[in-house]
Image (cartoon, rainbow, N blue to C red; front, side):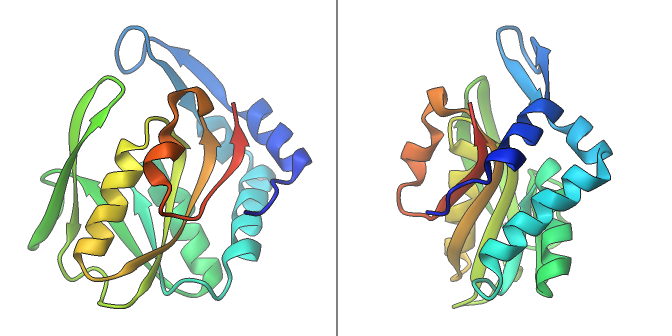
Length: 178
């Protein structure tokens, strides 16, 4: 596993903000909108991931919604395709679906059945790893399509929620862990 850049880690943590009681009471939402508003920091995050993952993937999968933003930028820089992993009911063609538990409920993600091909290596990108349900469901969907997960890239990991434990089969990298 690559060691996170300590300055990038510090800058990411300084750039994120906490939103109390969102989306439900008792949850502290880690908002990375301020990081996106900082083009230098945002570009450093993309460059950090691209440097680590160049040549290791054929497609980038971004998880709705914040994973779309960085995922599409990373795919562009890597010169590979991008596929969205969406919330239930948002994709127009035949899909694979996977339901999972969140720290505050349940949800379902979908991917087009033809989004990735058998044998393709897919880099999964999202903003925050909490319980691991969202990322785990995404990895399962990619594998259901016949592709493999080459790695998982995250901006922030909430270590106390032990989401990484659900992802032991994968190469997981987080820029910052709290």
